Image (tube, rainbow, N blue to C red; front, side):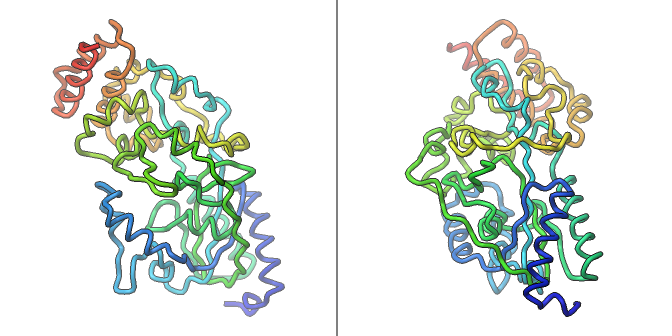
Length: 360
């Protein structure tokens, strides 16, 4: 590694260069943190012990004799001295209305999933940033992450001054709200950490009060087993029957805690065309999406994060939403069209929806 890496003045100059290169690459903010995540491992262990992770067994994986890799960056990437966190906004102007959520005939899809999958875009940008740093300082050790490994990204972003952890557990920024993606570069460069920001949630409980399933069981603590995002995306087994009516028309993810957050009045619009809604998903009718065949699902959602749940769970989620929709001949006809579906899972949820509508 070149000698300049240990020079404080050069390190500060390099940080400013990295921020500038990040902006040129389309990132909305860049922050720097050290490797310490004080209290993170204890908090994670308590969350796992409570069973709040549900079927997400990967959250309990990656444990070494030294501890959980999620909380120990040097166990994940030996030699790590600094972490560069990058933020990019995803809120699109055409996806900014709560009207879809309020209309039980429409399908609500979490705003982050309306466009193309962010993983590839963000990873590519982070790699370009790493390449630009290499061109300036020479070869250095690094690894790029975008939800691709056990990384406690909110903790690192908080330590880098990019925001604070809200009571809904998402990162919040006074000037940008919470509608953004995060990615990291773990590096052996000795970059001075930025100053963390203080918590600005105060006594507000808007996110806790807004959660349709009361999944935010305490400030800064979410029981994933109750969360609509978990139920519609991560859960492969049965959605508990008591929770289905609470899901409303949310067929992929849930934004209620973000929609209720006062800081999102300041949420910035994305500059990325790839994050704009595709195939009218921000306005789509439930019966319209329920009529898609598997080939249409795969073709239209190619490059979308939604595709990873597969066609069966897509129909499962929509069937629940149809069961919660205002009863109409159109809705009943749509459900009956899938009553003899080849999938037992789909048939089960269609039967539940029809029974619920029949009971009025």
